[in-house]
Length: 424
Image 1 (tube, rainbow, N blue to C red):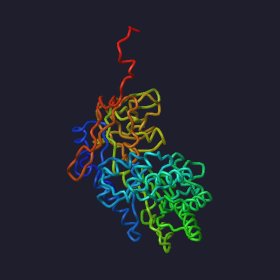
Image 2: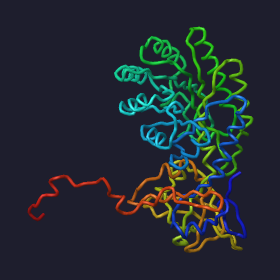
Image 3: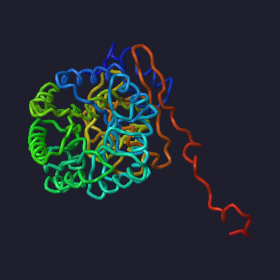
Image 4: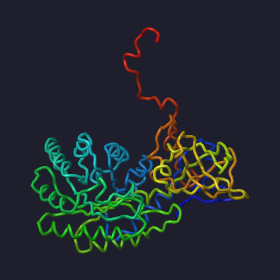
């Protein structure tokens, strides 16, 4: 359930009319429902209540300080993939011992910062990374806790760009190399083996891949036991899908039962890294119609939000429902909803059956809470848009819209262009 619904033909976010927020803040804007975020997080916790896992929200899905702070207040840990996400997480008040650091390309300064803050553990993605973390921990007179991220070569049956558990992807370490890695890590003086990690991908809509992966990881755990290598955590990552259109993702209780049954009797504590499933349907993108353009072969609804604001349709051909903010008795048309960017890939919807739309009307792009603002850019020198959160009958801007000065902040001319010179 999410808290976006029509009341008297006007779309509301919780108890606030979306049109009212658009008038106050301007468009485009991202709009989040706090009640939806809370409901999704509590549902996730309840599904796994019997196992007492460490739930580490995946910051990359939506790294707004307000969103991070809410999850921290509700008892979440944090899954990060960069030094910037570490910075954001600490600023939002997360305890370092609830932070797990994943990602294939950790820089030395990022590793040092994470070791210095004594995070829970690093998910190791390569043997060179393992050696570097041991070296940096020694230089800092610390011990770093680690898990090796296993690449189980399991097909998650999702878009290839967001599949991370296949052997052809850059992520994780194959099973044989991982076992050698654990033996090597046991001999390293500055690392402590803490867990086994895995992440299959994102927007997974069936339980089969999770079941196959966790079965293989438990076998790895048994082999480590035989080698007398103690392991505390089993990090199963995230990846549970949501409904954007016609998907039928697994029920959370069925997903929980699959993982809990697998670890039963092992003594392992689960770490879970949900992202999209918590925030995806808790947000929308509100955009205004600029023009209705009748082409020779189709109709284009030109809006003020572009691919720089919402990249997923251009990048993944992802589906987002597009709805009028104010409903009216209009016939449906088939149209492309497109933005102002000078790219043919600049679309929010293609060949979409939707109510006809006129200039200055507002549209809501649904399911825009995850991997939407987080992936936005200033391409074509378009300032990034506002983020707004609603709680009951209140709303507040949690990130102001950027202005033109923000576009050039930090830039400077090379010194030779600042000196007086002859005319060109």
